[in-house]
Length: 561
Image 1: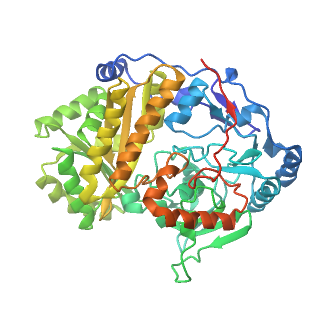
Image 2: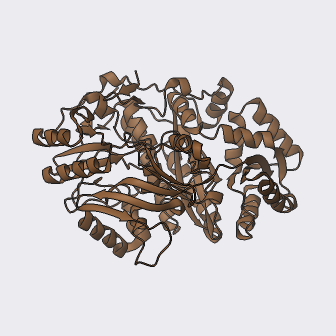
Image 3: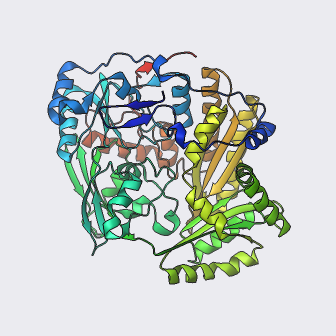
């Protein structure tokens, strides 16, 4: 069994994104194609959860009783099953350790609050007893953001916000909606159905991630080019901190000093716990049009989409794949993919770079905005692949994590790296990161596919999102080191190029060592000072965002398969 039930609050897969019934299983043809490029694959099934030992909870009895008084006895759980269900996030390293039973990190207890006051009470108990607290939404962090580290504390509890899943208010005149932080993306849209409004924020983690997680990590959705990032949607926040409550934002822009909302948009649970979020919403679009184009080359596509955004003609969704990602995508699609690739080549795109364009809004606005971009596309030599292909992408855009589960079972390393920089530096950054990843993996004797797309564009620059596939090395230590070395090389290349260490995956623990290079010594000092003021005992998410002054300790449960 891979699913773990906990406290009557449902089940969560332990070493997968979702249950096997949701797998997107690659065909034999795809596996043959991957083996031809990466070498012979050896299936790597996950070890049974039942063989992973869990150490006894280190939560002091007095602290446990105080937490039960705060939220009710049934919402504090020290059972091994619940603790394993909260063993980190969804990075390749997280999943690999759980799949192999290698250094699985577990909290000492799980606590489920339902209100702001209960969150505040939990933080008071944790401060009094010196217990670390890890705020936890959908558990989708890929940068170690929810890893249950104790830091210098005696114990660590995971603060699971899934009970805080209510829509608190809707202001249809102002077009705002106030949610609790544990509302998932799909639930937010369902709760707004009666108002015919939408948040419109759709990252690939949409199925599991929460609104609180979006804000805490400064998420960017797939339609952020048109709708804006989550930063642009935050109107007001209510925050519980160890020293008291904060209410931030007045509903309209103001000049009442620095905007303190920005401190918590991207704070990753290190400064306080978001308990209410007021977000800008908009009417559900009456029309959507998604279509696929093929540019003759990735660089030609970059030139066109830069011109579109700088001239104010940008679609709501742009996803431009490089040639290697296009080839892999077509291979994964089987016969339909081969037909689309052949069509593009027959029309002159010899090494096609596929691009999804999407518009949303009123029917008239969608037609008008689409017509604006057609001359630029046609002048560039782009080939129209069709609306069906664009709609197919939209329907299946959340399939990536499900595909990853099946590819991990097949014995593949599958992980992503993302960054962003200015247009003038984008090509140099693209080449440097690809080279760093390929060369490092090749040093292990493992050829790789390094795929890339651009999906968030701005007048000044754009993001780069790399997907890496390689043959997983046998043995837990070797498999973990294989990716960690490649990731470190990519991070070094990003830092050397003066690019951001994260466009939208956040800092977490994986990127914390690189933060100083981006914000400077003074910047880290500012963040540390704010943390000291709001969290004087350092109980909130130790090691995330701001490295702790004392090396973090771990609670391990491991087995060697």
